[in-house]
Length: 445
Ligand code: FES
Ligand code: FE
Image (cartoon, rainbow, N blue to C red; front, side, top):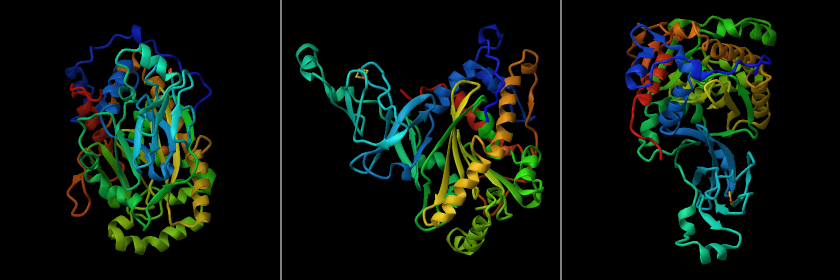
């Protein structure tokens, strides 16, 4: 939740720092000792490089299929700081292109979502179709008669590559990027817990909450990647207020962190943990009743993961709580600000009354007025602002919990670590971050 206390603006020019070459970047994260330099959270230069080397290079979640179900359905969102339009074309394909006119750069779509088959720019009236191609402009003969080599087909909007996995639509402006299948890899095995636990798949409930927090985007991403440790402390008073009892300490001998390619999931096998947060007995009953059906579909182990106390982050900036069903993206807006987009993800086949309970439960817990989001937001904002201090920024942060916890597990995919109280997923997030930040090849053009 954004605080009412103004954040002190950074004075980047007065800060002395090492030039940002690969050698300097590598020193920022120490995987042997488990420590991280605070520069990651305040530096404008690092932030600029993140936009280039992470957000303009990897696949990014942009929409759920259900948000653009029909021809002409569209929404506007961000890929890094680039505004984009996501829309379903007549051929059924989802297209993603920059929300910026090729004439003078004006934003061509001002709405957040809706249905239209053409996007007409407010400034001079150039019109683009659902593939971003320029299809019309006022007084076209003026251009034809006086503009040498005028060719409408060359003035379409820059489109991204688009691929999807079981309802989640991803895009990238990087023509050299691996396929989405390779990008997700074994993470798909985990995603199926969320996306494929029932016939018919999932949908986003209508509506999308957008809010701002004064924090660096990596704080919430790494928190959802694997910070189970904070829950029993940060959210204890919230849990008391909501349910009359504090957060139960989880059994660490049946709890895991798993990661691959920067994507993370931490979970216990104590069914119905996250769903408790919704405070709806009907949802708990629904999950319990469905457990045997899910076991037939995904196996016993994954059937235990659906409502367990767990959290996940799909690299770089998309997070969710399985069973609790909040689904969100942390869009970067500078080194110390994010725009948070939140939805509620449900099984399509769930009864309407249950979907409504999910919606209310998420609003109570993880929305701008949600008890648990306020707890987290304060911590992330304060961590971001304090890191800038001239002496403070020279002190390293500790990420050494559970360094010896790697195990081989017969069934679980990826790099698996025993115990959720563990920094392994967070270090894996930063390993991927560093790999991309040190890769000097140009990503998107
Ligand atoms: Fe869009 Fe001129 S800026 S038509
Ligand atoms: Fe939290």
